Image 1 (cartoon, rainbow, N blue to C red):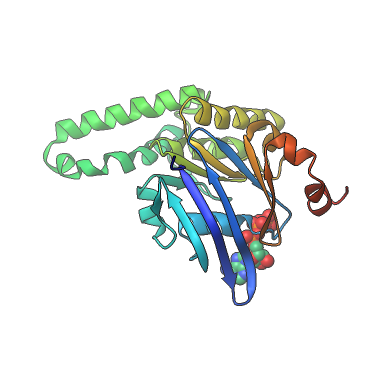
Image 2: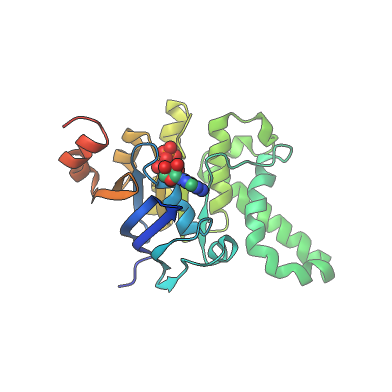
Amino acid sequence: MTSLLTVDHLGVHFSGLKALDDVSFSLEAGQVRAVIGPNGAGKTTLFNAISGYVRPTHGSVRLNGAEIAHSSPHSISARGLRRTFQNGGLFPALTVLENVMTGLHMQTEGNFIQILFGLRQARQAERDAAAKARRLLKLMKMDQMADIPASELSGGQQRIVEIIRTVASEPPLLLLDEPAVGLSPIARAQMMEIIKRLSGENGVGILLIEHAVELVMAAADRILVMAAGMRIAEGTPAEIRNDKTVLEAYLGHA
Ligand SMILES: Nc1ncnc2c1ncn2[C@@H]1O[C@H](COP(=O)(O)OP(=O)(O)OP(=O)(O)O)[C@@H](O)[C@H]1O
């Protein structure tokens, strides 16, 4: 069976430095895979190489079996792989609802001609988009924030809205870069619930970089551990917790 995402012997070299060295793994629909490792392990480089922001030196990345390793970020995104960034911003002056609706426009841009020539249909499309955005916000327990400007949200709430905006277009594959960084314990629990719901109920494949070990252990189905650009371990949370190489290389004790 073809996996949703297959990363095969992927390498990224920066003038001699092997930021990513021969990394392989796969991700299935409905699965959450975490990537962990100390600073400089190559996690961000891995994300950049998968999403087209960095050109791989070696190896391949396949999305539903189709090679995407040398495609542009735009074309990779159009094929259904979406990502968030560590400092990805919302539009501060727009309301939470409007921000989520910007994520839906990707789906409706095919209706451009309709928008030009059929104002009535366009208004209906806009109403449908607003209703869908509200449904999503309600599902993620953010509906009470819908009509306030994004600038008035806390950092953690902004991150949650950014994820809702990213998933509004229903991508089959989502890359989340440190979704829980700087979140309060409550927001962290909410984030974990959102991640589980997206994968479990909506079947989204999720790849996430995360330093919060408790979130990783609770939310991930499988974990990839990296150090110095290389994959040093791969397995279920229970396997990783007891892996001697991981304890030595990552957690600093055995
Ligand atoms: N554009 C670049 N040019 C040269 N070296 C780079 C570039 N991007 C990353 N590196 C180097 O590649 C290595 C891996 O960096 P990367 O940012 O992928 O690690 P990381 O695991 O994401 O770290 P962190 O947890 O600190 O974000 C580091 O040594 C980094 O300095």
